[in-house]
Image (cartoon, rainbow, N blue to C red; front, side, top):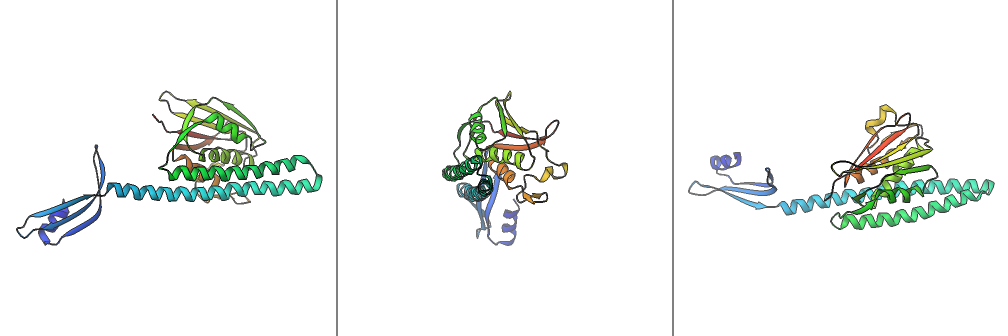
Length: 265
């Protein structure tokens, strides 16, 4: 190692606070201290700091996920409050109980979202433990929040957390609000390697080619109203915990979002 040669040549001791070592068998973090003895021999003291390093990385991940939870709360509840406000305004004008019921549903959804995020916060604070979720049940639950027609095909059980509900809800919300979709179709498949994926397809206007590579970025804005891509950024961040998310075109129109879940034994 160069450091040993440097110490042997200069006689000056050297401290490397973090040194990453990895081969095909192990990956470790070490603290290295190299010094020269009076007889000319060079000594290297190695302190294993892998456990501390992993704890530090875990705390950073926890901090990032807590930031995401905060964004989910502000984003999703803000959407529901807009629905409540609009519904009550329409109700005042024509006294149609349908809009009063819609606002009541949104209030309940806000309360449910707060509870879900509280559970998610507890989950990620407890060593990132995931638990089994039936995708058919997840879509059924989320569909109660929407008036759009949602059809479901297939199901499988995946390892996830409460954030999965927010992922599916945000995809459907985007399809309706930004793509004017009138029908959503979910298809769940288990491939030959036992990996589960869910395809969420809509018949809306689709995703313009010019923005496809940007839709999952935080703070991305598009359209006259400057709608942000925070919902999809949240979806990608959550899915990174237990899989991945991608988007493609639907035929003849609309968009398709594919959720792929990591294989768990």
